[in-house]
Length: 336
Image (tube, rainbow, N blue to C red):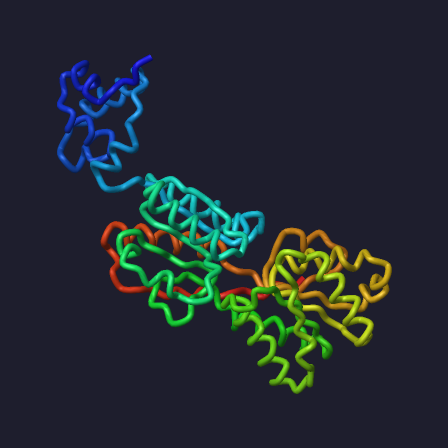
């Protein structure tokens, strides 16, 4: 069956293609088209099952009405919650969302960005980048396709960022542990360690430890391989408890590490330490309300991250925002 064209719709209704396009693109009121005419066009579109050709419209308007979100791991609840919020905000503004995972791989991220710009023609990209430096992004084409970075900062890059106060939140939770009487605080980090969020959280940890003169060596910051998180976490805990049986707190720098830690304590070789350990995490997930131990956590404003990043992207697309923005959102300490 032949697809109904705009020209066919124009002939059947007796209205110009321009008028019909204005109605379908939500510009009827702007151009003084009566409510009655708008209703006639919309009713015909519904009855005749007319679907606008999005590719033709993109060529005509220069906009696809698609935004791409690229994150490290969409299965991480932190990113999936942000994605849900971005999708809702975009929907309200007449945009669609594409979501991709880079799997913490620079080459994959680069291919995704190239694909989204060259093949999909997205209007903007929101991303939590895995790049170590900004060289790749110092490219004129990104003036045509706006980039807004979330969660992570690229050093020495004058871009648009929406992040949380990772340093301040980390410092607050470590000091809360210390005030609870914890002195041997093990910090489980994640590699790659060049990610700004991890660097800032480690700095918050080390500054607090130094402030209270806990005299913890560098071995108390243990990097866990992103691709072997469960295996590495169990191995690290076995080693550290063997060397330091007086560890009284474990601070994990994201929720995946916290979950891996909880699973690791099921292992009989270290399960005996579980009852005497205070757990803390930079992230807050629903699971923490269900476990049999109160977990101290840092809550990030994920809704605000998604909303701010979306509105900033759309403002750049619409020409309402020209100056680069750095939006830093506060965290909250959750005490159970």
